[in-house]
Length: 287
Image (cartoon, rainbow, N blue to C red):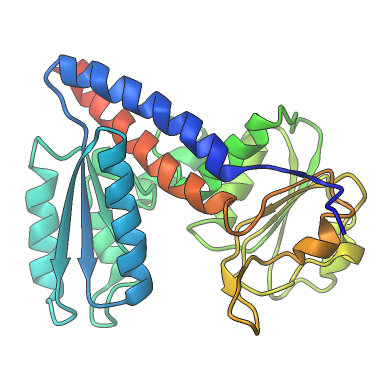
């Protein structure tokens, strides 16, 4: 069955945005500043290793300087904090990303808070979250920022629309809701304790699914013509990569939908490049 919904192609949009990053990066290099990102990986988590490799590769392809620092799972919290302190003071590094999850003996929040807010290109620091909350300039978390760019790319006017966000994580759900609110959408956040998810999603003009649960959103839960953004990354029984949305069903009802893979995923890394570039541009302005 052919999809009725138009696909929002994250790969094509990423390509366009990365080309803009490369142009701005070369302008900065002409002024003697090469945007630099340090990616820190602790432990041997195989999924994290793939993510990290993709981030480093994307940096290099867009003309950014990237440093990958890998440490064993036995690394102490103090040693990691000392390394972050050194990176905070390194003028060649404009962005610092510590890949999560961290080993159990390391307090992830303490590590995130150790990163200088001026280099917090993941947008996870409390000061970044606070800036988003009150509408000040700061780094937006990359995944929800990418979702906003996808909505921009189809010329979607959020003002007055009802947006439903499924998921309340600090990384996606909460910042996503705040970004939608900034664009004058009416926002509902749903989660595991929501009594009737379907009743909420049927009212939505925009649905962002971000819980990491296969088929949490099915066709009977979507109002005809709604825009559906699928942030989830799951594997089905056959081992195929899927999102949180029943794509085959929902694409017959929605007006626009993001695929998995090839939707939000590439946009997350792209917005990391954008944030790193902007961190370097701020430094270049000061100097």
